[in-house]
Structures are given as C-alpha cells and as structure tokens.
Amino acid sequence: MPRNTSGGFTIVELLVVIAIITTLAGLLMGGVMIAKKGAGTKHTKIIMGNIAMALQNYKTDAGDFPPGNGDIASSETLYSMLVGTSGFGPYYSSNDSKSFRDTNGNGKMEIVDTWGRPILYTRGESLADNKDFELLSAGPDGEVGTDDDVKF
Image (cartoon, rainbow, N blue to C red; front, side, top):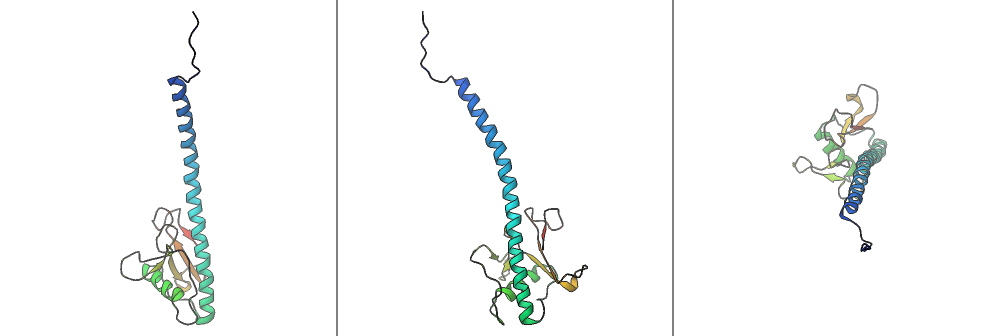
C-alpha cells in the first residue's frame, strides 16, 4: 500500500529551521550592539571636534578660552559662551535638537554627547599636560573614570 505524501514540512523540520534562524539572529544582534556602541563613540568624537573648533574660534575673538574646571557648571558655561550670541557668536550650533539639554534641571543648558550626558570641559591651566583644554564624555556607561570614557 503506497504512503500518502503531501509534500508538507513536518513539525520537527519546522522547529529545526526556527532554531537555526534564532541562533543566527542572536549572533547578528551581538555584532549590531558592538557596532552601535562604536558608532556612538565616533559620533561623540565628532561632536567634540566641532566644539574644539568652536573653542579655537572663541579664543581668536575673545583672546582666551572660556573658564572651566571639568564640572557641570563648566559645561553650562561652555554652552552659554559658544552657543550664545555674545561677541561674534554663536560659535557652535547644531540642527539636532538632542545636542543641548538641561541635564541637572537647574534651567541652564549643556552641550551633550550621543548618550544625552553633558560634555565636561576643562580649561588648560587645570590640566597637567599643557593642553589648551580637554573635553570629556562619560561614554556609554555614564561613569567618569572608566575605560569607555571619550576624551578630546
């Protein structure tokens, strides 16, 4: 007696295909997350490079860099000096509405990194290595002093 073959898939075959697709998707997502972290770091470096150019332009006009010692108040000062219209400003602008934020709720804006945290600004005399200034992002983890910090 011949068997009736309908040409469909068995439940086992379907489960095997689903397992293979799930495994491949899991492997792919790991790579996507690593790429996303790297892209965030690169974007923050671009933001910092733009701030550095704005600081150089500010120094050309004002004769010195804005004050700053690396705290949140320095980030607020940096925003007001570079984005404000005093002197020949603004020196820094962005079409991205996420570039500026009041991160501590005191009504004063800061220039923020890719993750929405303030970019910390330190003027040269507060630094040990004779740089004119330093820009620091806490990186993806939001903690200053860890391996994923972004410095310029």
